[in-house]
Length: 378
Image 1: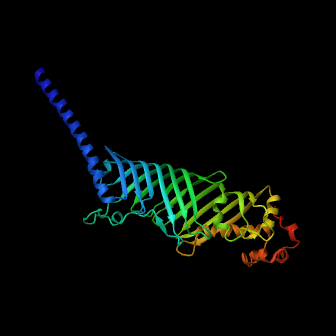
Image 2: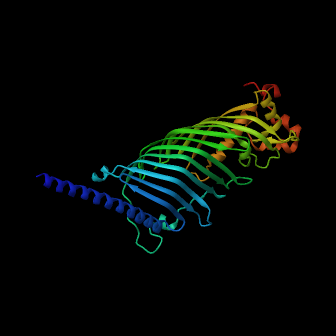
Image 3: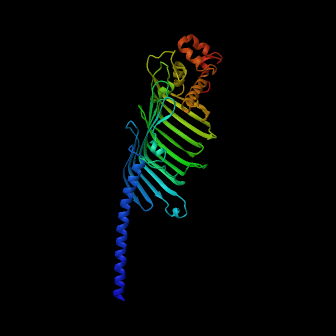
């Protein structure tokens, strides 16, 4: 009996060893097979360094996508996916966690407002392999419990500006999104976002949290920007004004609600620390109002101007642009703060620069008391 037990034990040990070695070989070759299949389907513009496949966990290293010009538009240092394999037995595809580390994304908007980067390769968008092959079957629905982006970076190049393109950078971006269904469903996903915005005069920050229904673009969120360097954003508001701002920061608080693609976003903007190039006369304008009045207001409000505004519009309207709407709302709020008549803004304000100081008096007509009442709300 003892000898028989020894034989059984030896057989079990050998079986476990062979099974373990077989699994290791299968996993190793599975990694190579998966990488080869992905390379075939994603084409030459996509590259993947390595794939590590383990039970319930997949890790992908060195993901990169280049545009036709050879510029890297997407890069991921480390992508890990943890799945609920037991859900497969119930025919439920559930991914418990997706973690993306060291993400880089280059987004480019042309002068018509269309996204030209990044664009997925045609073979990927059509579901066909890079070579000759039949179209792939649509993937089954998948639920992702949580998506995390750690230490992300975004370069946003906007060519739809009046003067010159604007490059906005986000760094140190951390993002967490919960409950995402693919294909998108009519449910909300909660998110939290923090990031830094480097500028010429310092580092700004952005924080945002709320919920978004990806399928319909409905959302309910709050966003806070602090110490945003507005000298980098001059093409948005400077337009053809001769006034050159050399220093300034923007604090912004927004509450955004979107329902049925209608936007309602009340907010508060604080312009602070504004400095202008010396030599600008009374005829110059800043954000559509006479520079002389802006400087006077700054001197009487601790070098900061607080403005209330509301952004409203229809996302289906091709003429609606959130950035342009925000600029106009802040300009209007500035005029209201200074007591300027809103009728004819910005035309009447712009004319102040060409017709000189004489027009300043008529531009302020109806205020009741002139400059003494400009600061009545302070």
